[in-house]
Length: 124
Image (cartoon, rainbow, N blue to C red; front, side, top):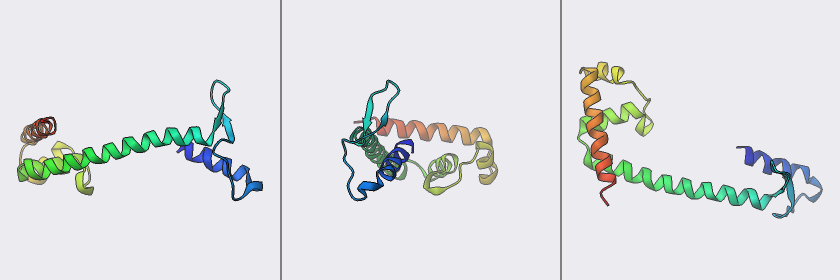
């Protein structure tokens, strides 16, 4: 968010050049006093984009494993517990009350489901 603000401030400050902004133009200084260009910030931002793509791939794998590896009750407990599929995150106690089982049973099912997922995701 800070990077986006720096970029926006840089572009606004160079209103004289409304349609052109150089990637090499200095937009500020870092903690050591070195000039920072727009290109420096964008390169750092691209690292985060790769991380986001990697995270997306891992999430796809996780949802696939949840769908095909877990039993319906395990799947439901994990969805409720961790707020998957746009569900609200719930405590083990809330899940136990909703499902009519003990909190310790919810805990055991959750632990077993997480072990299954971990094992499947680290097979290859």
